[in-house]
Amino acid sequence: MPKKSKKATKQEILQTLAPCGLNCCKCFAFAEGEIRILSERLQELLGDFDRYAERFAEFLPVFKNYSSFKKLLHFFSQGDCLGCRNGTCKYPDCGVIKCYKKKKVDFCYQCDEFPCRKTNFDPDLEMRWIQMNTRMKEIGIEAYYEESRLLPRYK
Image (tube, rainbow, N blue to C red; front, top):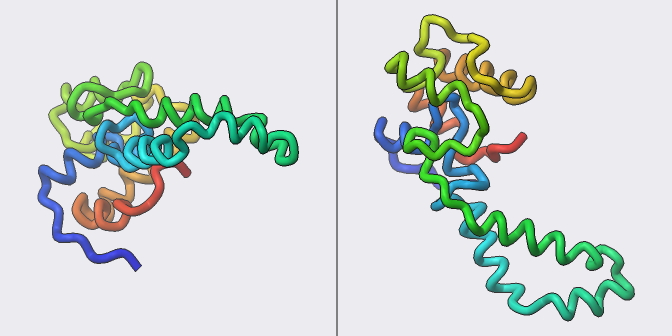
């Protein structure tokens, strides 16, 4: 069971949770995120595995995909985003980033137009966005952060 974290400050929460409610620290593109750090570490551990993968592919066909895996792992290890609130949102044409600054709110649920059609999210992300913000409104930002901080970002 994970240890209880020290109570996060509002500033820490705002640096972790994007205005839409997603956890920036769990994003594949986040510079200091676990995905980037663990991908970099896995690359180090694998070293020059290419020639072994080639040999293993003869009796373990999955290793025929090693080159593609290696490219993706390298991509994950190059995360450079500083977080949505710091102007490096990687979601193309994210309407939330533009809107939250204009509306001067920390999270979408705080806007009198929530939920709206300005996000430009695909249907799955839009549904999650509504759920996350509705939950934050119900239990508060601090409780939502504690409830969600260890969960995977990609569901």
